[in-house]
Image 1 (tube, helix red, strand yellow):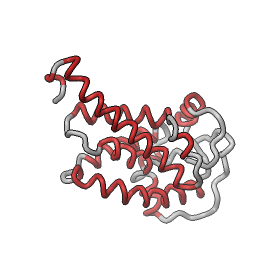
Image 2: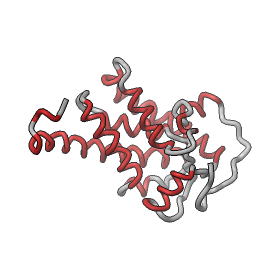
Image 3: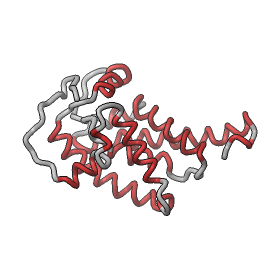
Length: 191
């Protein structure tokens, strides 16, 4: 991993418990050296496909939001603001300027919760899942306000809350698209 920006703090010598690191990194998907946020989102999407998960999304979103605040904050304190090259490049283009608090690339629990928010209440169609994945990744990268503002909150709060807003924006966007697609293409496109 390489760092970029003012939050390139060196790792601090604080041990992070294995389970905390496992949760924060999305079962270590965040340690993939490129596109870790995309892989974290994919983990969240795949978890949502497990039998019975659709009905449990709301309590899981709430539970893992708060667990994520703790886990993301602990790993961020230990890792500093280290970013993969792809994350550093995306931040330079889409989120220029300094970041107030570290949000290392390996933390992806925020993407997992964010995609669950995007998928909440969606039909179980392939189209809905593909649109949800794409919409969430777009909003997560672009971070329209207030996502950019809440990202400045300290510790795990900022790390988690910007993805909550990205998930909310994506959820609304996908709902609108699912209403519009049949009007444009006819009902046969939505499996």
